[in-house]
Image 1 (cartoon, rainbow, N blue to C red):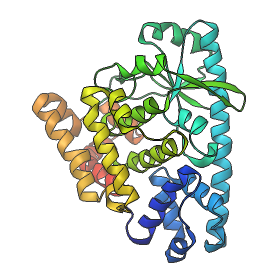
Image 2 (image 1 turned 180 degrees about the horizontal axis):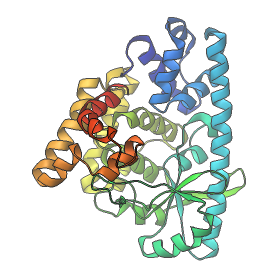
Image 3 (image 1 turned 135 degrees about the horizontal axis):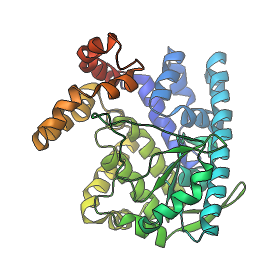
Length: 358
């Protein structure tokens, strides 16, 4: 469920703390009636670390019940430790690539916590994203192959291994960090942003060494395109996009003309939409950042399905009736399990329920 009322206002206010300063959270915290539910909501939207940092930085912890305050403190410490480990791996993997003569740039959340967020633990970062030139992708994969202790396996509706538009399948490093090796900037419809990011990369100091990351305008363009073009219609990324733009604005300023230029002619309207969401967030518009369920269902499920079915009827059918191999992996049952038939009937309900829980 999209947060509304006091929980929605509190989560929205916490996003502003990506700047290192923000509104007083204590009055909003005192309005919260169900703290376990709020913390669960923050986790579903990928904001647990952001909320924990906001209370720690703002000194508003005394307005939070003891149990919830302890959970926030533990989340803040765990987030900082995880992101420091991620940055350490980023430095190490970039050095391996550099030693092989392959340029690389850390993008998305890794770059943002390295240079723009006030502390590493102020943002949730799910994985390490490294961008390399498409022409050196095979070489880069060979260099990093010894670092892959496990690989993420994902199937499409036909039951075949997914071929991603922007990166190779993810792998886990010995340090437990999930890494994606990118050959394009996520969501870039023309494929030119990746070359620009690599050409204009800058170096910053982080714990463990130095890290190559995008220039601020390019980092903002990557954030906008990743969320609104790479994951169109998925509302769970919108709050973090707002926080990311706040963090970039606080450290480097937001030059919207330059960001639009980085995104290109096709990406320009995407940047315009991101700017509109960002400005709505600053006006306190909770619904713009946490879309309601009806809007989310229409955008996430109905419209994508109709577009897919019009373009490729077989693929549209496979959305509702995927392969047995896909169903077995998605729902954790054997391919010959009698439960599989029941899961086919329940699939539309399960999809709707999953969206409503966001």
